[in-house]
Length: 340
Image (cartoon, rainbow, N blue to C red; front, top):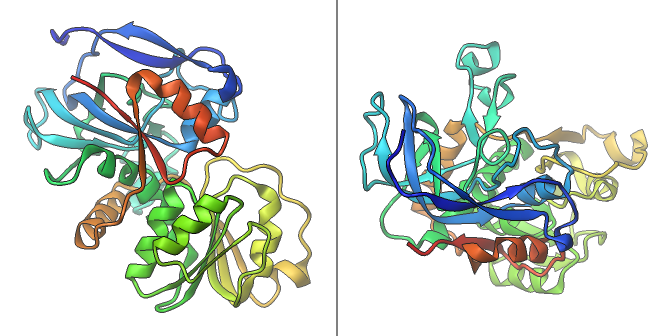
């Protein structure tokens, strides 16, 4: 058992609208690391829309008094006896995927994101809205020393899931990409696509988000239900709004693909074959990510560092950050920072 001093953590006891502050702050001693574990001192944790879904009850809690957060930047305090890849003092990232079985047909075929035994940080195991967390070293990422904590934290989910969504969308080289919704993940994915030579069109409800999209190099930025100025080769739906699926499919050119990036989506209205799917349009979901996705994205982000629009909050204001995200008051990514 760890001998480090107790810290504090935010927990979800009873899911409720974010405006009603469903998070509660409690004292919590650091957990035991286990043989492959790392005890991590949290320095920053991004605020993801998945955290909001957990706090508001869209995702049923898998863990009593669950601590959200899975975009964690921290320092290793202690390592388990079976851990050789990290040492105390190392800078590490902790992301959404926390465990897979390694033996099922999905794991053995490179699709560990579909593992039936998968577990997730801030849902099945306590996450980063805390001063300390524990992670299996096999699911941690080594982080560079240069960038600020608040610049790295959003990469660990918003960036990684955007990378997988872009891969699932099968955007051809030099293609035309539509992004529906423009929050933390989309503002990173837009830059990734542009660095690969794509033309990006953003469709989102917020005026500030549209301005940010243009600042980051988008070719156009319109309302969420507007038609883009040209047919799209691919599109990604980041907004958890099922009503946007039909217009996004209609915006696709022949052979285009729409990838839905979120873990939660409201109901999808009826689709018609001729208007939405004919001419070999494809509708795909995105489920979590593999560790290979994480390593590939972080390597690409190191080669082409994105501009991360981060809005910092002290960890003591986690409930306020979540409420701001729910109300659409965050442009870019909200990040919790811990004073040590």
